[in-house]
Length: 201
DNA sequence: CTGACGATTCACT
DNA sequence: GTGAATCGTCAGC
Image 1 (cartoon, chains in turn green, blue, purple):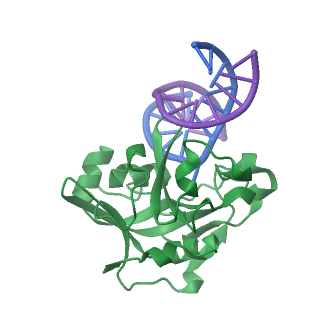
Image 2: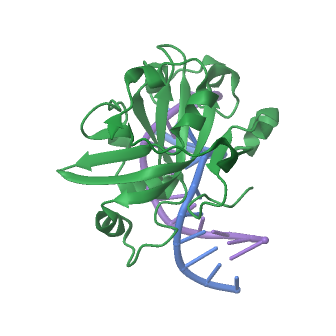
């Protein structure tokens, strides 16, 4: 198992990077405790031309500043005052591409995930949905800006890959406000995987 | 400084 | 299926 190189994140096509993230392993290691999961659902946010993106139109604020940084860092955003959503920033400096990790399949540290999410037993809701993924892996807004090649948070490749026919595309979830961009098929997931969030709003 | 709202989730009808 | 929870961020005054 090896960490994905910085070049993986520095490519122009955020859609391609999003698809390739499927099957990779997201690992967090805080206070010596490691938790990890295989990525099975993602959504791409295509920078300044994507109305659903926080950086649409080149809008640059203190919060979105990290999206304009060089790819390969984490962007964790607080939604509805309760949920932390974990994103991967891609592409080069000043190009605010990002990929939202919507679901992972737990691999390591499941006990710790149960503790973090206050669940009694592991089921498919443990790491299903962006809020739960962040909660299970212990990610919070303070982790924004941390490199994905650091020892605390990183994404690894263990040689496993899903076949192209197992990957499906659909419109993104919860972005109805984005007008025609809400119809773009920027959400990618593994067909039939029970951790993929099934609610299509 | 103030008000409105969101890349969601969970409990309840 | 519906609605509440809950607070940082941003735009406007």
